[in-house]
Amino acid sequence: MLITKERRSATRTLRGWAISVLQEAGAIHECEEHGWAKDRADPHARERAVELARRDPPAGVSVGEALAEVRDVLDGIGDTCPECSNGDC
Image (cartoon, rainbow, N blue to C red; front, top):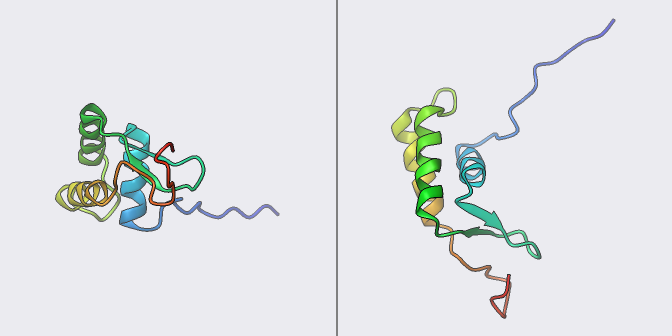
């Protein structure tokens, strides 16, 4: 007998969800060498992330909370990797 389970969301926290929205919109990307998130400084990508958060917040989270988390995460990410000494990443 085949037993199926409901799949859990890949994102378990509101912060993780916000990071995935920002990545999907192209507002942030990872340092290829160290994995730190970096801000792309693309205003259009930021707008796309906000629109994605507005249209599809996580279950049980208000639109206002979702937007606040996306903005909070984005505000906490710089445009350089803290581990790269030469700034080339």
